[in-house]
Length: 437
Ligand code: AMP
Ligand code: ZN
Image (cartoon, rainbow, N blue to C red):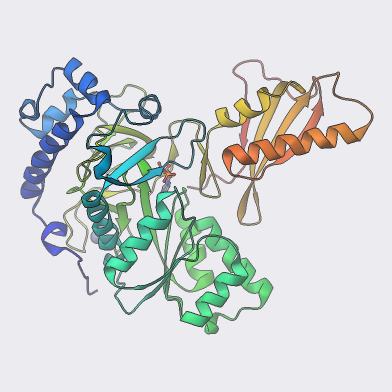
């Protein structure tokens, strides 16, 4: 196989040089961090008063972990390390309304991020001859603008189609000869079933590849999409706290995701003991961003479960590979690519006085997409024979939830005391999607 490298120097850098580069960048990043209100305090307490406190990469272990809660508490500017005037963009995590976790970028930060995304795209064999349709949500979510910029950097013709509206997506594909798409795996499956439904012929499309990410999916799902659409599917991993897409990506070997170690330091820990996982063991991924000055984040607990694959990759890249992410160590749900915490749903429904004490959140497959159903009990006073006020309440809950979590749920109202009560820890989330990852 002929491999192509966007930045061969870095992608094939010998490990020792790569680690020396990481150490330099880590020191620099600690310097940025010490200029933020949050880390000023956190690092000083840990005895790290200046970048020179970091002598070797092992000193990373002296830095405390950063969690999502820390980021929320630091909202809005607690993690900002450069003057506000030097910030050119912000993104926010899709899973958080109320208090979002916000990431700021300088012009240089955007350029560095873009070049990592370009590296991922180019490494799958794309060139400037490709036409790239970015079928993912634009906006505060990083997947839209992140891939958009990376695609342009490679020189592809980028179509910012955004997510949804399959009829329009097919038209764009046909009109402009789209060869590559980016979407969530569930949307790609949806596209395939719509193709059949709308009678779109495969030979009317020039599709060759897809980048699929933002949510966990199994190897079987990848294979299914590849076979049904007759394309190559590459796994794309990223998170807004670490810029967004471009953190780890599959090369043409499609066996594990190269984590770009010149931009990020990755650790695997045991999520219960918080100790480093043994060599080759799986656990929770912890990441430190080395390529961003505006919002330095050190040892971020991603909650994503994975591990390092052993051995080198035939493509010649020296950056270690992660196994496909199989799930999370917290209760965050990813529903059609959108992050939702059960606590966000609870906050909304429990604020309504007509709602009783018990509720159940159910997620299941509806065809290829995910469907969220929120079942809540209604106080005896509100549960009347007249269905009109109940329908109005249902609509109010649906509407308020949608405004909060951006997903349109189905809402079911139940009589007080009728939903199952578990004896131990309340089992409020029922994720019925096949756990085949
Ligand atoms: P966001 O910050 O909204 O971009 O969401 C990031 C989260 O989406 C990650 O922490 C993962 O839980 C999930 N995610 C992103 N890409 C993948 C992927 N390729 N496989 C599994 N989960 C993913
Ligand atoms: Zn490789």
